[in-house]
Image 1 (cartoon, helix red, strand yellow):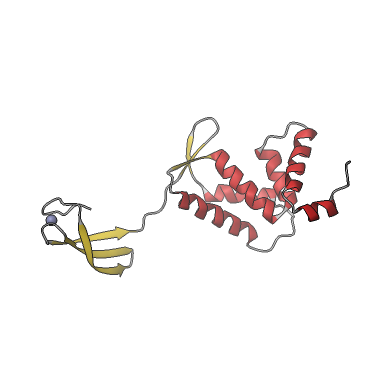
Image 2: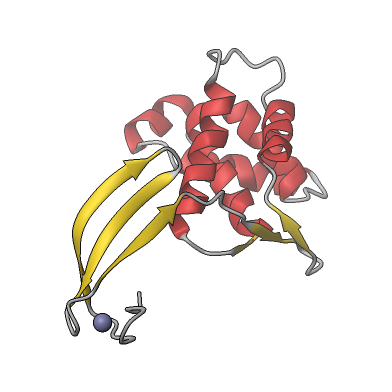
Length: 162
Ligand SMILES: [Zn+2]
């Protein structure tokens, strides 16, 4: 923030006031002691997704929701659970503070959330996202899923292989 009088970059905030669409700050230049006003506005976050083929596409929460709903179809989930996942993913993306995010990264985030939410939804999503070509891929994913469980839980639910 440069001082409009002397271009010094050192200023201190002497007053700060919330306005309807942001914050208004009175600043005092450390160098020349002149005062000036700045406005800080909330800006809608624009986030771009880099697709596998290199195309950029604006992040679209509705699209994310559609994918989630498809994976969670007919699963016994609490009302709002899917929307909550979409909200969390969006918040995580915003928090990363990067203008562009590879779609594979978002896919991994979805997988992480679905794993906690519903295993069937997770496998459904994985089968599309990971492009399962045969039953071995599916088995590997299920094995990975089971390996996330605590050892005691896994012992209870898995047949003993040895
Ligand atoms: Zn100044």
